[in-house]
Image (cartoon, rainbow, N blue to C red):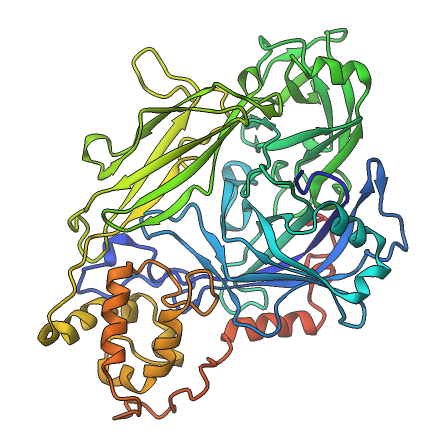
Length: 593
């Protein structure tokens, strides 16, 4: 089960993405010149949900939430009593799988009463693409985060919302959740700076399912027009229903909002066979079995999720034939806009982003599905992008077991500092269920984006603990780059490049550096510090006297371990408080829903 199953809630609003951009240029590390600030040099990594409310859902198959349902309009929030969640890149050399860390998601009632809360398992975005065609800008970029909510708790008031009771009964420990984010504003000095649009879904989750994607029927990229692509999507068959997620698939007309007019109506159908490819035009009378139509204009269904009745003939055909999306063609036929992966085979890595110490191991689970069902005995081929220069040892291939999964073990060597100013190296391991005659991976029709759908690992350099007489110099070398590339600390707290300024902050530094990496208070926010280097800093801090010895700035050191709120988070929440949230701030359209 996943967020595409029943019962399901959808929600929409905005999000804050206060990512630091002073560390975006890998070439600036190890350079005496200051880094290029890019669009948000003083970002602090904060992620938050802004003005998000429940917009729809289904209490059961074919039972959408009707007007007046007690779930509609409920607030979807983050935790009020902990530090904000963080958005984090793996490395300056790998910024295409940004992760959310330290997030708690809450559902509250009209009086602020807690109905549901859960801890968002750290997950990276996937299926990043530009939804505006060739002319699309930064605000047209869109991606999807899929994860699970853990440690789920229901408040007493949840009993008044039957759908929540149904969720608790069918999935008591974990819930599946999806965010689709797009339309971020990078224009400074605007009210919406560093914020964007968000749609989401919450539904049940069952053991054995992936944690970071839906193992359903994957529909590959297609072309709506010669200049405009149509994104990837996923569908699941549940009983006599087919549920399709187009939330990150349809392109926009111009600015983020309404769908492109050519995508106003999209037919969902079963193709005659594997020989029909995306872009082919099917004449009237072709052996196509129609399931239904996705209507995206004047507004798409909530969160872009379409639930259609599945005729028995179509259900039978889907056991051996590909699912597809069709649009009307000028000649009277229908053009295949997007279709299911070749032979219905779909392989994807779960938990594909890793931070690995030299000499350590990491494991990745691969899931294989055929026509949406677990595929046993599938050989998945692996290839290190760096080839023989790689410091990772991985098998050439793995074979899926009865449950359609296989485990890949990554064994990391010591990179020996190949990048001046940056720790270790970023490794990529590509995978595919097919291989070409020359031994390279065959990704044609796989639903895999070769530039991003890889296993990504930041392998850290080995670090020998320094002798006591060299300890302070070692700490200085480790902390100094953070002062340069993460200047918000120096602006509001302490200059990390000045150890005399750091000493009064000993208690707060010990608190942050000792936190688990999943904790929102974890330091560094960028989560790129190796464990041996973190141990070196902690060793130095523990050797300092408990009382501050000197003050390097007028601001007093913290006494409680509570750090000041992030400035953009305060501004963004004020934006919502002043009423510039989902509906009003989206120029009056429902394109975000």
